[in-house]
Amino acid sequence: MFSKDETIKWFESNFPDLNDPKLLVEIARVGVVQSFKESDIIIDFGEAIDYVPLVLKGSVKISREGDQGKEIFLYYISSGDTCAASFSCCMVKKRSEILAVAEEDSTILMIPMNEANAWLKDYDSWRNFIFNMYDQRMFSMIDTIDRLAFSNLDNQLLDYLELKSHTLRTNVIESTHQQIALDLNVSREAISRLLKKLEINGKVKLGRNKVILNE
DNA sequence: ACATTAAGTGATT
DNA sequence: AATCACTTAATGT
Image (cartoon, rainbow, N blue to C red; front, side, top):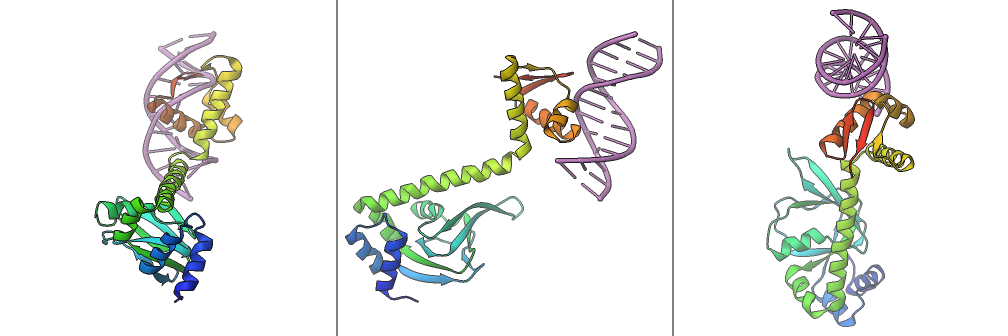
């Protein structure tokens, strides 16, 4: 473990935005430093969350429980981050919707949620910090969703259609699936199946030898 | 009507 | 995601 002074120093270098001296004193007063080994479970599904974790060292993988108990990766938090989800869980006094596992050996400063909550109104720097975290996590989640929802080829195909439509100044693209497939170096079947999806999603309309790009 | 070519589909790896 | 094998649909002669 680490002394209070060491913790504060470490804290200051990792969380430069939290530089309010009074806030640092508070953090030192109520914060508890905990160490985790790689793949240790920090927060499990359904566990009550009564503290906000601030990562001093290492990194933590946050996932959600999926359909058949499968883990769905949400995002990583690492030095200088906190888990936005844990905070929202605290606020509504719910049990954990998420699973937090140490990705590597990690050191985490636990802030009891009562304090974390009170600081929101007492310290601008704390409030900004938490809101920034929400913002960042939101974007990193959107990124991961994008990667899951659309394979490279989806976007490639849409780009291809849009480019062609733009250069030909028409949204009716007269080419066969086979031609498109050749241009994109994939099999004809792959194109047929993707176009079908795009049609179902209302992006295009299909006809023989043509693809009509919707607005 | 028939042949040809394009597109859709399921299975397999 | 590729390949295969097959079906179904559209189109030309």
